[in-house]
Length: 181
Image (cartoon, rainbow, N blue to C red; front, side, top):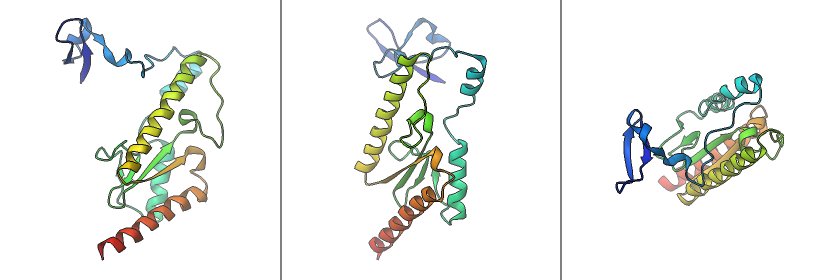
């Protein structure tokens, strides 16, 4: 794995392997848009819970993908790098991007999850940066002509979320068919 590091010398920026990088400062954590390392867990139960968090293939994502296949919409791309913002589920031909947002990490407006009580300053900044990143991704996709759908973790079990996604996929399919004729 390669890391981006900066030195105090004239050749300030270079790619280095991890072993050689011990003598360099990590730029990643010095940027004002970064948080730095997370604070230590306040309890063993919190530590176990946080270790269980993953970035890809979360339970809500897997459930939505299964629902899409059952509804007759296979052929999606997962975490597609060619699309701006790297959506969780992408239909490149239809130009539809779907983000499956976790309620805690993305601050769901429906279920309004509680703010952690310890290290409040860290968590407020973390959620603020998450919101900025999410808005940037959506904007990049929309500027590129994509339809962007946000599906919240708490909506996955409801039929309304699937209906909203299927409706959007159906509309883009009809539009694509008219454009080809």
